[in-house]
Length: 449
Image (cartoon, rainbow, N blue to C red; front, side, top):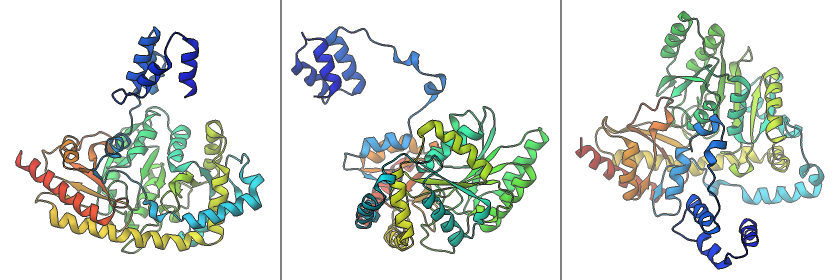
C-alpha cells in the first residue's frame, strides 16, 4: 500500500481499506477527482490549493507538447508530435561497459556530490570538442555542465532577465525557451524566419526602431542550426551579421545548438560562437541528441564572467549536475566513442527525413508548404490560411495521427495555420502512413473553407 494511503487509513480507522483502494484505483477518476472522493469519504474539509501559489505559479501553463503526448502515448495514434531521439540510437552496450568501468575505477568520485560548475575532465573534453570540431577559441571561454540545456535556459532567465527586458526571438521559436524566459516577465519581440534563418534585415529595422525609442534588447535568442521547430539553418553570412548587430546595438546572443551534429546533407556551418571575439555569445550544447537524454546533461560555453554568475545561480537550484552521468559521458568522449557514434545516428535518421519529405510530396494537397531541413529532427508545415491546426488536431487524432500545432511556437501566438512534424522517433512505415492520414485530414479541412 502506498504510504500516503496507509496513513489515511490508519488515522481514520473506521474507514475500510477496500474502499480506499476502490477509490484510488478507479479508472474513472483522475488525480483531483480521486482526492475529492477521499476527502468526502473521510469528512475532510476541502483545501483551496490555489490561494497558496505564488503569482508567478498561477500564471504557469503546462507544455502543450507534453500535454498532447499524454493523450496519444497509450493509443494507436501515429505520433509525430514529440521531439524524442529514437532509442535505437542509444549506445547501450558501450554505456554498460563504461558504467562498470566507472564504478570500479571512479566509484567514490562518481557517486559523490560534485562541483557546481561540473566534473572538470568532462569540461575539458567539451572545450576540446568545441575547438577541434568548430574552431571555437577555447582560451576565451569557460564551460559549465547543466542538467540538460533546458536548465541552461532557466539559468539564463534567472541570471540575465529583469521584468520588462526586451528579448528578441525567432518566429517561430523553441517553445520551451519561451516558457523558461516567460517566468522572468520579459517583453518578447519576434523576428520572422525564412529558409536561411532569422531575417537580419527585419532584425536591423527593429533594432533601429527600438533605438529611436531609447530602448534596446538585452538578448537575442536563436536556434540557428536545424532550428526547432522550423528545421531551417541560418547562413554563415547572417551569423556574422548577427554578431555585428550585437556589437553595434549592445546585446548578447544566446545560441542554442542541440541539433548541430545531426547533419544529413549540405555543408556544415560553424556555430555563431566561432566568430565571437567580444564574448557576447552564450552557447548551449547538449548530450541529449547525440548520446542519450536520460543522462540530462548539457553545457553552457561562455565568457568566464558570465559563467561565474550562472554558476552562482545554479548553486541555489541543484548544487550540482548528476556526477555519475558526467563521469560516464567523460569516458565516452575520452575513448573517442562520441565521434564514432554520431555518424551512426546520422545514418539512422537520414532515411527517415527522406521518407517524410517524399511522403509530404506524395500526400499533401495543394496549398500546403513545408521546410526541407538538411538535418535535425523536424519539418515545419503550413496549411492554407483559415485552417487552425490547434482545432484540426482533434480530427487528426481521430484519424490516428498527431502533430504539434504551431501556435505555441510564436511568442504572440498569432499564427494558427502551422504545425511541427518529428521524423526521428517513429519507423519509416509509420511515417508514410502518418503523413497519408495527415494529408487526408487537411483535405477535409480545406473543403470547409
